[in-house]
Amino acid sequence: MTWTNQRFPCDFVEINPKPEEIDRASFDSSIMASAASSAFLPALPRPRATSAKPLLRRTSSTVRSPLRVISATAAQPSVAAPAELVESVLSKVNGTDRGVLLSKEGHADVDRLTTDLSKYCVEEPVKNPLIFGEWDVAYCSNPTSPGGGYRSAIGRLIFKTNEMIQIVEAPDVVKNTVSFSLFGSLAGQVSLNGKLKVLSERWIQVVFEAPELKIGSFDFRYGGQSEVKLEITYVDEKIRLGRGSRGSLFVFRRIG
Image 1 (cartoon, rainbow, N blue to C red):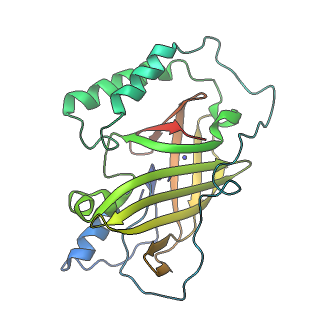
Image 2 (cartoon, helix red, strand yellow):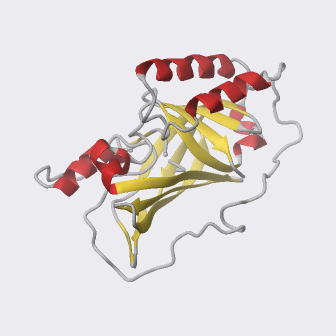
Image 3 (cartoon, rainbow, N blue to C red):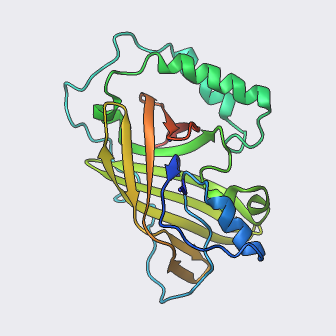
């Protein structure tokens, strides 16, 4: 939840992977190094093709899961957040390529608005059933954090991001997916599946399996396990806010 130290649908947050040696002499490895600060996906791999396997598909059974209510007594805010404040946050990040196109002043405005919105957060957001659902990664204060090398300055020229989705399913399943087109034509995606663990009233940890990359007919896994930590600072029917362990701000917009 807002997906390496690597740092998502699916990323979001700082990830602590097993260290790997990096050859900085090649272009591919520069992408990998950039991804080492990713919050949503780990580093871009050196492809080693294996037998093709079905990748996570966005179906009604695996992606658009219905909202699951854990408890009717889940904590609720004493005062509801003003609807106009929620809409102000969403309108500010809309059309910014998840924060890439925002100016320094624009990022400051988002930080101010989300700080105000966080004042209306429930006392124990990790227990609120509204955290479950399908979320679009709408913004990150560090634009290269969710997606790593795929979202670096060079990576964005090669991998045009189509979607960045995070699915949170009860009781403890998290799925991050970045869909892209290679040079604007060849479709691909990277997926991670993880298990959620509650650390405190506001903090969660997600341990992810090795990511799976698909480009055209190639489908393979790379790297190893990784983990992220995220503080939930606000959640309602439309929006979820989070901060990574290194301070990156994430805005998630509900789409399912």
